[in-house]
Image 1 (tube, one colour):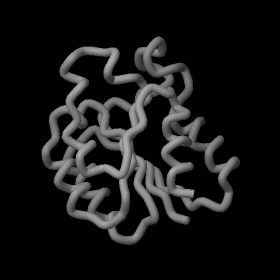
Image 2 (tube, helix red, strand yellow; image 1 turned 120 degrees about the horizontal axis):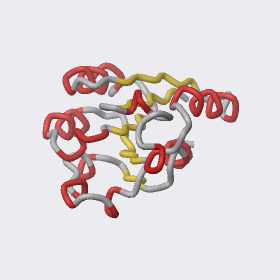
Image 3 (tube, rainbow, N blue to C red; image 1 turned 90 degrees about the horizontal axis):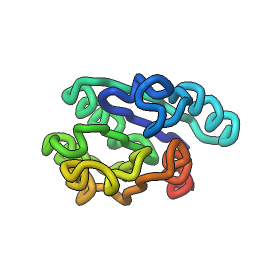
Length: 137
């Protein structure tokens, strides 16, 4: 099984950025744990702070992977282009968020991705990624 995890803007700072919201673990450290736990899954990880690069990656893997786990960060609430990219591909996408976006600022309650995603997981910390992965197994 091939799964692509795509992280958007500022998620390269996990472990450093607002640990009270996002925790103190880097994503790379968490990914190592996932890879050891799910050795039969081939993971591809991509992170970018640039919207167009995220769209490009979705298009690149969107017809050949078994699933995409997407945390688009702040682009979730602003990017019609990312929503359209999800709609255009055949690979199912699970939208994930580390924090519970519904307990935060009101602008974070809107998602331009959710309507085109297979599902949405919010508020379970880094475990959100594993919960998304389990939906593909």
